[in-house]
Length: 89
Image (tube, rainbow, N blue to C red; front, side, top):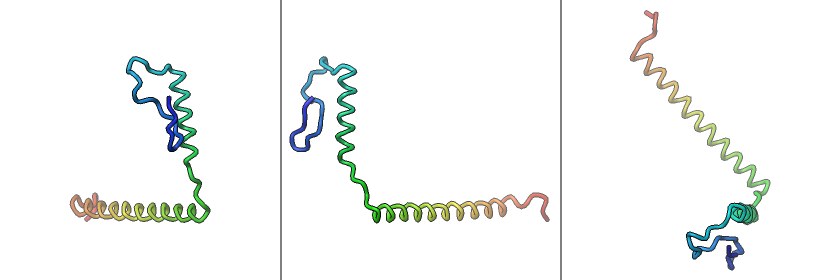
């Protein structure tokens, strides 16, 4: 295991031989260190960004719901035209 100099990330050695693998506990420890290193990079959005992202997602969901509803109505109409209404005149 080597600590990457420019960013301080924990990485496994690339030149380690295939026969000399880390044992299971060392691999788990390396994984946990890497998880914490990634979690340090997480940036929490501001309230304004959070509201903007939420509105974008809700807008996208509404547009997709309208698209699915429109396709549903179209398919019902096509099915009715092709097969007719059962029991109808």
